[in-house]
Image 1 (cartoon, rainbow, N blue to C red):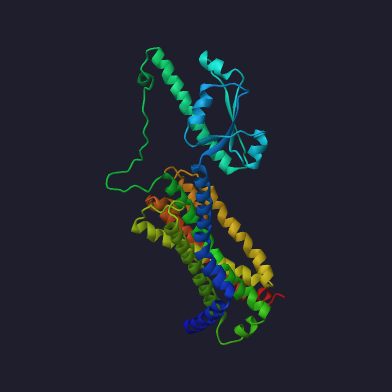
Image 2: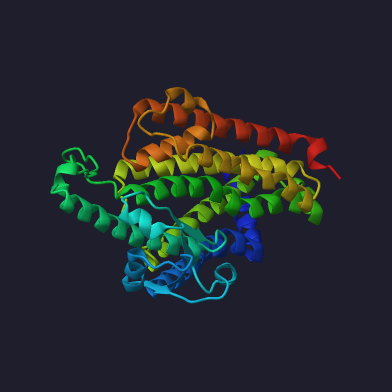
Amino acid sequence: MNYKHIAIVLKKELKDIFRDKRTWLAGVLIPVMVFPLMFYLMGMGRSKMENNLKQDIPIAIEAQGEESQLISYIKNAEGLKVMKVEDAYESLKAGEIKTIIHLEEGFEEKIKGQIPANVKLIYDEVSSESTMATATVQNVIMGYTEGVRLGRLAELGIDPQKLQPTIINREAYVPEGEESKGGGEALMLLTFLLPFLLMLYPVIGGMPAAIDLGAGEKERLSLEPLLSTGADRLSILVGKYLTILLASVIGVITSLAGLVVSAKMNPDMMPMELSISPISILILVGVSMLIAMMLSGVMLAISVFAKSYKEAGTYLSPITIVLMVPAYLTMFMDLRTISTNLFFIPILNAVLLMKEVLVDIINPVHIAITFSMSFALVVASLLFTKYMFNKESVIFRS
C-alpha cells in the first residue's frame, strides 16, 4: 500500500463526486433542507388548526325537542357556537360543524331524578379538527357535570373537599448535582430522532458516492484504466473507501445541521432543551464514526459487485430499511433496565448506546461491548471489501 497513491486516488475521486450534482443533492442539500422544510410545513398545519380551534367551535345539539340546563350551559359556554342545521350529520361530514352532541330521551328528567344521563359526542374521525374540537366540547360538558355534582353535595351538606382524599402532583426526579434532561416529550423525541439520523444518514450521504465509485466506474469503463496505473489495488481501494467515508460523514453533519436549524425556526415542533455532557458527545461521535466506517465498506463492496449503476442502487436501497428496524425496536425500551445481552447484537447495540449516553447513562460495560463489536464489524467490512476488489470475476463482471 502506497500512501502517495492513496492521496492521488482520493483527490481524483473527491473531484469526480463533488463535480456530480447528485452528490450535492443527496449528501448536502437534501439533509440540510429536509428537516427545516418538514417542520416548517408541520408548524404551518398545526398553527392553522390551532387558529381554527381558537374561534368558536361550531356544534349541533340533538335533544329531541327537549330543553335542559345542559343546553343552556353549552350555549353560554365560551368557545362553542351552537348551529341550527337541517341535517347535522351531513354538516359534520362537510366540515360545517365539528361535533354533534346527542342527549338521550328524558335527559333532563334523569338529571332532576339524580339518575346518570347519557351524552353522546359524535365526531368525524377523518377530520383532525373534529377530533380535537370534540375534546374541547367534552371538557365543557365535564364542567357542567362538575357543577351539578357540587350542587348536589351542597344540598346534602357535604364539603366536596372531604371526597378528595389525595392531590396528585407529578415531578421528575433529578439527582443532586445533575440537571433535568429537558422534559419527557423532548427527551423521547431526541433519543429516538438523533440515533435514527446517525444510523441513516451515513447511508444517504455515502450511497451516491459508493455507487459511482464502484458500479459507476464499471459502466463508464474507467475502472480498467485506473487498475492499469502504477497504483496497487489496495491503494486504489483505500482511496475510494476514504472518499465514501467522507461523503457519509458530510451527510451526518448536514442532517444534524438541518435538525438544529429546525429547532431554531420552530422550537414548538422541535424542542432542543436536552443537555448533553462532553463525554456523551464524544461517545456519540465515536459510535457514529464506526457506523459510517462500517457502512462505507459494505456499500463499496456491494457497488463493486454490481454490474451497473441501476443494479447497485437496487442492492443498496434495502440497507436504509434494515437500519430503521433497530431504531424503531428500541423506541419504547426502558433505558434503566436494558439487558447487557442486547449489546452483543450488531447495529442494535449502537442505537442503544446512543440512547443511553443522551440521558447521561455511562455504562463502561455497554460502551466496551459496543465499541468492540462495532470495530470488529468495521474490520470485517474492510476485509470483505478487499476480497471483493481483488476478485477478478467480480471486478470484470459484465
